Image (cartoon, rainbow, N blue to C red; front, side, top):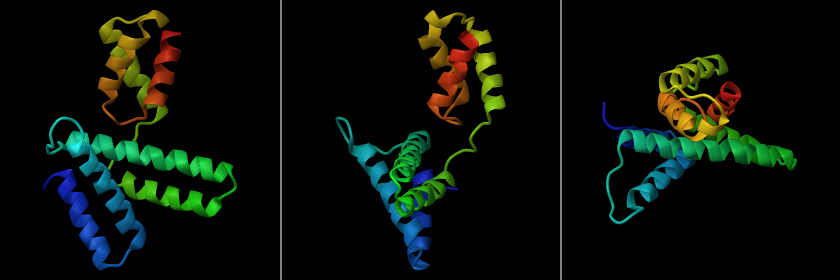
Length: 150
């Protein structure tokens, strides 16, 4: 199998052929974000699968936040569209960890690093994020680290 970016492009072409407007527009948006990330910085470069995954994670988070904002403002139709786009992006992301799994991983990372007390929140977060490796949102991980360092 090719890279994640190749998979996105292939799925975009399939969606275009089947005239699926939601998937087509969502994948176009995602690929645009990937291309923007590729040309950011001093020189253009090809992103690795992990970097493409980070871009997709950020885009999916934007969709969830926008859906929450729209539903809070009483715009259910727009919230539903944002939620649907987020679901399309979720197909390309690793399965999210449960709260129990996050607690277990964070506990192991804190024990391995010997972290204790809130003063070590920064290094503890760095270790916990590395252990979780993009399988959970940073806010959920931070809350668990805070709780365990508590």
